[in-house]
Structure formats: structure tokens, C-alpha cells
Amino acid sequence: MKLAVLPGDGIGKEIVAQAVKVLEVLKREGAKIEMEYGNIGGAGYDAEGDPLPETTLNLSKAADAVLLGAVGGPQYDKLDRPLRPERGLLRIRKELNLFANLRPALLYPELAGASSLKPEVVSGLDIMIVRELTGDVYFGQPRGIEVRNGERVGFNTMIYSESEVRRVAQVAFGIAMKRGKKLCSVEKANVLECSELWRDVVAEVAKDYPEVELSTLYVDNAAMQLVKNPKQFDVIVTGNIFGDILSDQASMLSGSIGMLPSASLDENNKGMYEPIHGSAPDIAGKDIANPLATILSVAMMYRYTFADMATADRIENAVKKVIAQGYRTGDIWTEGGHKVSCSAMGDAVVAAL
Ligand code: IPM
Ligand code: MG
Image (cartoon, rainbow, N blue to C red):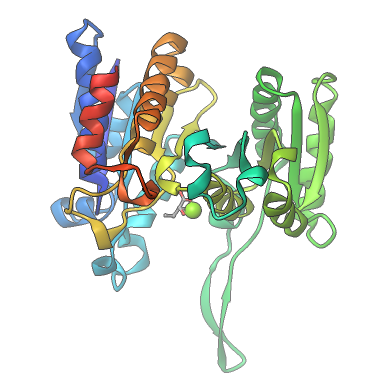
């Protein structure tokens, strides 16, 4: 198994180092894992003048899976747009055709107190958001800022083709089949033509999955339902921009964005795996970040790319165990918990493995 390891910026290096500790355990036990490091984001710009250097792209294309930390930092905010760290992330998603982004929002029972919602509203929460990742207003043309009638205007294009909607809908229905068989498609078809097409195509795909109960919600209502009664959801499928927003919102239901992994898949289940959270420059280098989202991303890698459910379960169980044992990084710490550093949390997971 060839892995491209791209720590990126901010806390990226610290959290990826903990996930690599887990991979090293599996390697010592005989798993054939080859890891090669590359630069991405601000680290790519600093070292090679590009947020997605050619070397990193080639390394990632040749790999079976990519493990990513996080990108971005205030020192890069003034760079020209194409040189900014976020562009590196968007480009690698596009170049590897990673159109299906799986973002689970799962509440660990012990962390119910860390959620900003009442424990009874969130206990038992287990949602999978399937976000389309290579289309929509993120990539649509035309886009730009220009002067019209003597003033500047900014514009982007929200666009989806049928085939783009169909393939991500198929992934979402497939996942729903393996879970609670409920899928909610989120769009804004009362206002946007792009969403109208989305809704129609999802309804067509639904015919191939008669066992899955399909519902649709407008995105504003979905945002409300997510805080009102989040447990009504099983799988949610939505476009790139709505998925970006709703997945951050859903992550907070579970107490900490520091707990949530993600997978971004192409049609052959090659994938890039990364925590949902960002580079957190304010706490970078302090060894206090939560590495569990990155470690859980390795579990997702085993589940989706390597189809090794036993190892995926084993890593997830190790994380459950350290949570049950009371280990807490600052973001999930509440009175009575045992506060540990990022690296100590990594060591605890290794011990639990
Ligand atoms: C995410 C992030 C990215 C996105 C940014 C960093 C470009 O917010 O992965 O959700 O908007 O997709
Ligand atoms: Mg986001």
C-alpha cells in the first residue's frame, strides 16, 4: 500500500505524526505500507513556490491513498489567489477526481457534554454527510472580479452536470444501503435552477435503490433541522458549497471538530483522507491539538480504499477506548477528564491498539 503523506500547515505536522505512529504499529506487525512525504498548501509554497507542487501531485497520483493534515495560515492571506494554500487543496481534489466527500458526524457518548446542544438532542447522533467535492460554485466558470459600469463586481457560477450529480448520488445511496437506508438530499430548488436539476437527477437515481427512503430539504431548512432534531438524519447528500457549510455545522453537534475524519473518493475508491478541521495556526507547534480526527481518517482509509474492515474497526475501537479511559485533548476536555497533549493522545491510541 503506497501512501502519500502530506502534513501541510499549522497543526498538520503534529496531528499527522500521531496518525503515522498508528501506521507504524501496523507496519511492525507486517502490513506492507510505504509512506512518502510531500509538501502541500503553505508548506508547498514555502518549499517549492506552489501550494500543489508537481512533485506532490505526481506522488499523490502514484499512491493508493493520500493522508493529508491541513492547509492554510494567516501569513499566506496576502498571496495572489492561485498561490494560496486553499488552492492547493482544491486542485488536488480536482486533479485526483475526488468527487465524493464523506464526512461523518458521530457522537461519542462520553463527549455528549462537550456538544453545545443538550445531551438528549445529540446522544446517539450518527450522520454521514456526502458532499460533492469537485463541482459547483467552487469550480464553475466564469468567475472573477471586474469593473462593470464604473464599479467592481464579483461573480461565480453555480453549475452541475447530470453526470456529476448522478455519480455522487450513487455513492450516497450506496452508503445509505449499508446504514439506516435513509437519504436526505439537500438543495435550494425553490430558487436555483442548478438545484432543480440536482433534485431531478437524485430522484432518477433513487429508482435504482427502492429500499432507500429518499427525502429532500432546502438547505436553509436543513440547517435548522440539524440543530433542532439532528437524529432524524442518516445520510445527507448535497453539493459542494452547501456541504462545506453543513458539515462544519454538523461537526459541532458532536462536541468537537477535532474528532471528525473525512474521506474524499474517486470512482475507484482511491481516496484522500484528512481531518475535517483546519490548520489552527493559533495552537500550531504547541502539541495541544487533537489528533483523533486524523487517526480516524486512517481508519476510514482502511475501510474505503483498502476494504480492510477489521483494521478500520480496530483503529476506531482504539479511539473509543482512549475516550472511555478519559484521555482528553483541550478541545474535548471537561471537568474530571485527563488532559493530555497531542503526542500523548497519539501514544494512548497506540497503546490501546
Ligand atoms: C473544507 C475547507 C475547504 C473547502 C477550504 C479550506 C478550501 O473548508 O474542506 O471544508 O472550502 O472545501
Ligand atoms: Mg469547510
